[in-house]
Amino acid sequence: MREAQAGRIRLCLIAAETRRHPGPSGILGAPIPGFPASFLGVAVSAAVTVRWIHDGVLKTGSQDVLADLPSDTPVWVDVLDPDESTLAALAKRFPMHPLAVEDCLHFPQRPKIDLYPDSTFAIWLVPLLVDDDGVATHELDVFLGAEHLVTVHREQIKAVDDVASDAGAFLARGVEWTLHAILDRAVDALFPVVEQIADALEDLEDAMLTDARTEHLSRLYQAKRALVQLHKMLVPERDVVRGLARLEAFVEPDAYMYFQDIGDHLARAIDSVETYRDVASGAMDIYLSAQSNRMNEIMKQLTVIATIFMPLTLISSIYGMNFRYMPELQWRYGYFAVLITMAVIAAWMVWFFRRRRWW
Image 1 (cartoon, rainbow, N blue to C red):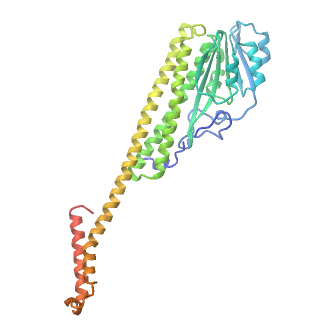
Image 2 (image 1 turned 60 degrees about the vertical axis):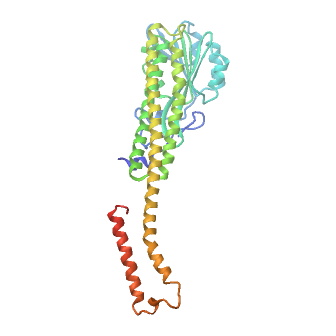
Image 3 (image 1 turned 180 degrees about the vertical axis):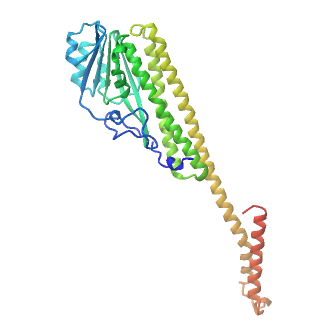
């Protein structure tokens, strides 16, 4: 049982457009595996990195080199913290639809895929951690064509940085393989977040079984809200992967099964989220049952106490009527006799309730 940890559960949606993370922390205050502080929302300057293969060797340059590259050269353009002028310049070089470019300038967006004649535009959300208000995400916008891949994002994304460190191996196979590698790592980043919520729910269940408190209910609602956010994010992302896998014009047949594998991972994650959402609902039932049992126990105690005082109240009421001809009122030991009688009755009732296990 980790009630102390459950007491520190913090469930928070950090919009990719306006907020920055001070450092890596999870639902229990622990770092998220695989997410160093340098990747969690550090504000950086706008940058465009161009990567392409020349004579089997990976080349890297700035946006200026695009003018000299042949149109049939497989190229990956990564845009960090985009602005309108940068995207407008790229739209002159690549078939980037104005509506898609507009989406890139308005963060955050929901996951989706848009098919255009010469390219495909997709939006992907990469989950990071869970805090007080929900799930924190980074948005990744993608333009995929026959020989080009353009990725646009506001913050550094670990999946993109990991692929960039070995971009030559992926670009040599094609831009669709580079996109697959990015999405595959982004999906892998999802499971620690789901497990984070699952561990928090387990801690809450253990805590509520021993001492259900009002604060537990609010944390349960936070956990359930985070799971709902994840579900709303993952279902359209599964549709994005399915759409990418069917792009015969831009995705070679060998890559189809690999995109399908990402879809399978997403389906498994969706099943887990739905399962934990049911667990959260069950935990709420546990809380309500615990509170109801606690209230019943309190009422039981009060009922027993009231029952014990009923005959005592009756006796005191009778001798409080102050009639003139009540024999006991003139008896020298009457007062003490009544007190002893009341004490004996109360003691007998306590013994009786104890024997019946009513108290």
